[in-house]
Length: 277
Image (cartoon, rainbow, N blue to C red; front, top):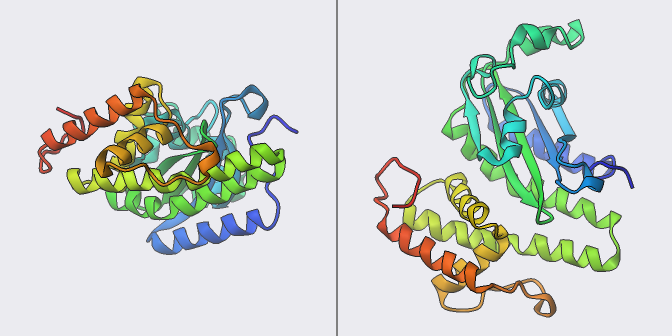
């Protein structure tokens, strides 16, 4: 097995990812390109490096070129800065080294015209295989905004599911079962997000960012926190993929879930702030 998070993407996964990207591009006016990238912290699965699995348009050039010295939105999203958008990718203080002139020096002249048309960009991170991340990126000829993030959020579940399933072919039977359970546990995560959205009156991306922030601060996996949260909200065991390998919710996760629930009730839904009071 190579050091990349996944082996090189082959049909039919490549076809599926390109179909998803095509649908994404159809939903985004001014789209110039998109990409699906993955990263995993394990040394034998990439060691945190970002790998592009599939790309269209300028996404095939900009995404790999902006994961190194000229790092940009995809790499920042991979660092779990959350979903992000910019109205001007070439003049954003979050990635000061990414400048149009410097990037044009690194790519073939035949691509310059299309790259010069790029203005805004957006990136959406999501979890796969517990510790790995999928990044869905898009590049526009106009500013990216909250509506762009909302469109990415609608397409992200299919992308993440496809990437998760792709890992099964590389695994033993036991590992494959674990990957399938991880995929199924997304339903519980979506339930938790739905409860947060209902209380906070926020977008899916904001609900996900809140869950992720709490899990990171407490060093608890999102799926365990989401399970504990759903069980607290419904006062019933969360539905899980396999009763033989249930996600055990430790006392710490249950405490965090209660705290999150109580905190959400203290938030003014019309307040622009995203934190818990």
